[in-house]
Image 1 (cartoon, one colour):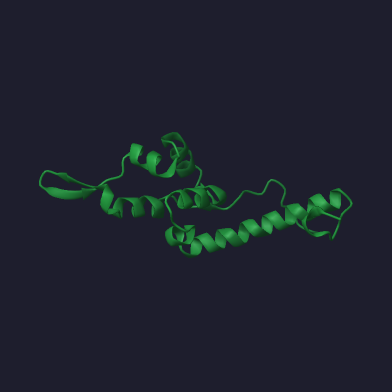
Image 2 (cartoon, rainbow, N blue to C red):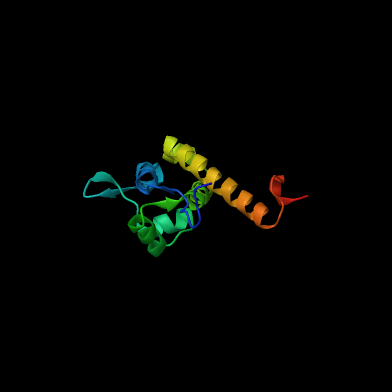
Length: 121
């Protein structure tokens, strides 16, 4: 008997590597009191990623960015998500692929299509 993965959560990736990357970007540098400081404002994050401040706050309190959203954010920045999250991205990719495969199998079994790839006869 298979373990139930119903309602299993999509893997999440830590927000901090993305924030650190944005803080290190040259375009984020500004002059303050005679020295250069790196700063990412909420507006900068929203503009660069297309994700609002409240959503960022939710992700931070919920343990990170859901895998699929992290991919979209990275692509919006013109980067591959593995560039930002390194091996954590690949672990999340593997975990999410297992969840998707399990849900596809369960759906096929429910529709009487067990063993049919992609749910098509």
